[in-house]
Length: 308
Image: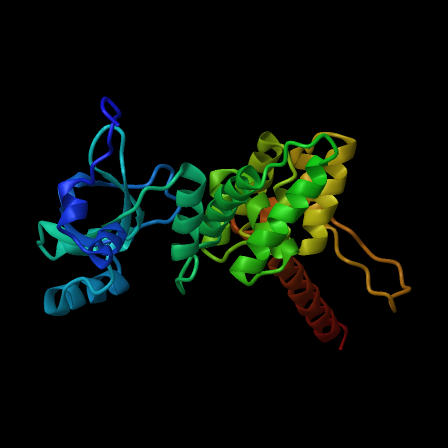
């Protein structure tokens, strides 16, 4: 009809097939300049120039980057790396200017989940890295699955999110919660966990202490060159609930011997503060005890000789 607006197909639609148009929608690998690629915000995984990195550099020099990185556009320009931080570093060390990437539009929660999942499958990951990564993913999953009905309970929602993170990581829910609690440790104690000096389960118990209490515990551990057992860490946690921990209360818990079930004889107890001045700095309680026993044995031998 005269005067009616008529919608005409575009030139692309006129001269392209349906398969061409579908192909245009597919993600394509692009070679992007390394200078245009930026690290993911609060990326929890360390990029170490270690032996594994050198192997990656050698592989890149010989074969190129076999798996493209996944990036998303940044509002301020350039691209944010979601997956491929180590490959980006490897390309830099290999002297390349570009690397293959897949550009994908995604929201923050989707990007966090992809970033964590693509890194947590690696073999060598520090406990602190898992702790930060699982916490980031948990918050993203909770936000994605947030329900707006009035009957939803926050506790149920959190458990549902923890279960999802656990299932997708291959860990138990309890293990995921343990890792996340490590985020409450002061940096020096968390570093001890990473270095294998402090075991995971005692560290989880210590994470319940206030930061200043953790500092007091750390000072004791460094001075005595020891680490708490799970039982000792639990006692420190229980004592902290009743009153703030002090150097005296920490020493009392850490120096107490666990009584044997079968032992019925009276026991002699010496305060570490009373005898530590007679030992080299850094002696553990066990070393002090063994030294005292050897002194008594030598004393008894000398006394026996004199009595002959």
